[in-house]
Length: 281
Image (tube, one colour):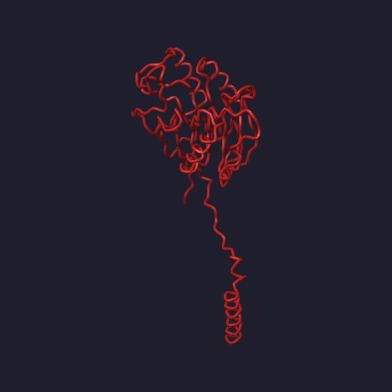
C-alpha cells in the first residue's frame, strides 16, 4: 500500500514567461509531486496562468501587487485528499501558510521566500505567525536566502551573516520544533541548491522543514540538480498513516452497447443464464 506524499520545493525565478511555465510543469509532472512549493513566482495579477494546469486542482498564492517580484505559491495535486480550513498570506508575497486536513490529519503547509537582507528579523516575525497559525503536521519549505550551517552548507565554509545572527536563526527554528529534512537524512553530506555569482560560491539555502513530532513520517529527502532555474529543487517523501490507496470500481464501457454484435452476445448470454438457472431449480 502506497501511503506516501511527495513534497517538492523550488525557487523558479519568475513564471511570467510561457517557456518557464512549461519547464515548471515538466518538473511537477515528472517529479510526481503531490504538494508543490514555488518561490519567486513574480505573479501580480489574478487569475494566475498556473490554474490551467489540471493535474493540480488547488492553487494558493501570495503575490506582490505592486510589481512582478517575490511571490510564492502552493499547489495540491487533484487526487490528494486535502481539505482547506484557513490561509495566512503576506501582503508583499514573502510567505503563504495554509492549514486543513490531509487525509483527516491536521496539517499546515507553508511556502516562504526570505529577503536577501535582514533575514533574521524576517524569521523572527515569521516565527510568530507560524506559532499562532500552525496546527498538526507542519511542512514549511522555501528559499531562506542564507545557509543555516555555513560550515557544512557552503562551498567556502562561511556566510555573510555573522555567527551571532546564525545562532539566533538556529534557536528560532528550534523553538518552532522544525527539522531540516535533508540534513536529517544526510548528516555528513555536502550538497548545494544555489550558485552565487557575486560570492563565487555554492550554498544550500533552500529547505523543507517538518515538525519534529512527525519526523518518524519522513521517508526520503533529496536535492535535484540545478537546471533551468538558478536553484535546485528539494524533495521529500512522507508516510501518511491515514492515507489509503484509491479503490478501483468496475464500470461498464457504455460504448460497447452501440456494437450490434456485442449487444447480441450479451442478450444471448443472459438468455443462457436464465435457462440454466431454471433447469437447476
